[in-house]
Length: 443
Image 1 (cartoon, rainbow, N blue to C red):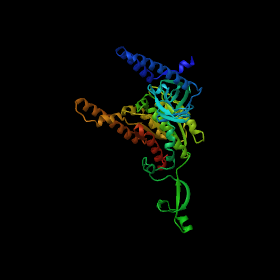
Image 2: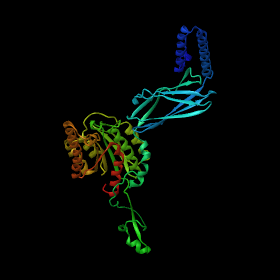
Image 3: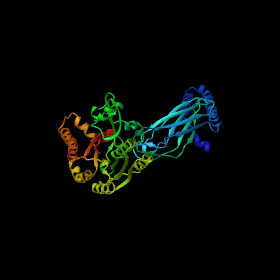
Image 4: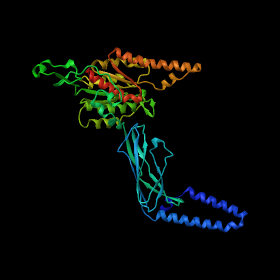
């Protein structure tokens, strides 16, 4: 029974069979062909038996293993590898059908390769998840054919393998070096504006060309009889909290991911930068209530704690309660902190409903509101109009874009910092804003 289940007839067998049937039809017209056609039938049966013998004489003709990361990175390309080891003494053709998790909706996965005799080969492909959670792989099906190509033998490996998908930890490595410099221009990413310096004294050192002349220490200069300057460093151990709105305004999709997932990925990378800058990173999410809380600390296990917390952030479609957010911050965050709020405002009316609570938070803390520009409107605005309806759509789109800029100005009036960004630039813009605040020493 196991033998029958693993045996599959290839297309080449049916092509040969159709050819023989055609020759039998011709034999009715040319009777002399009849016996020759039966010889072909006998030859087909002989080669079929030989093909079965070649593939089934070895108990373990082929070994295969699917190698996946310990966890998948949400929104990134994750490499999946398949190791194949051919134990046959002849080259084989393999057709790989991997049962991809249903979240990817892949129904036509197939890889066809040839493996030389008694050799090993590694084959890879990439998967890009767009949701956090558990991803279950099915069976890894390998169909092996000999050079005769009449039949295939199916091997099944790695059945029911589960891999969790976490927020984008791949970006942690990408932006790791940013924590050590406030000038991103040298990394070819983006240049930020550095204003002044912080006032936490580090040391007195000899003047070298390029040092700020305003930091000259005249007493030390007189003692050493050479120019000496004061060197300052960014203040450390400051508390930074990331507040993630997980209400319905964050469910808008962009390039397969929701705005909430972009915010979660950004919060993870920013937490890493904060800890590398010797500050304390914490976070919480809110909608109808405040949850997923991680208090700001600078422990060695803090990044793992933040990663696990972000993995468990569950979405809902309720309207976020900013009054509860204000009360929770006032109750639980006693020290002046930098609070980076990931949310989205589409209109001035939406902002005005929440503005009293944002102003209340900004009285005790340094508040940065991060929200998104609607990139779909750019296509409407830049499109050449030919009809009255297109003109109307363009005017409405420009109105919404203008309101986004009004929101920035309205927040600025009350001393609330803001970052208006596109989803794909969210991580960079958030890091830039944090580094700018650190360089200005306004926390």
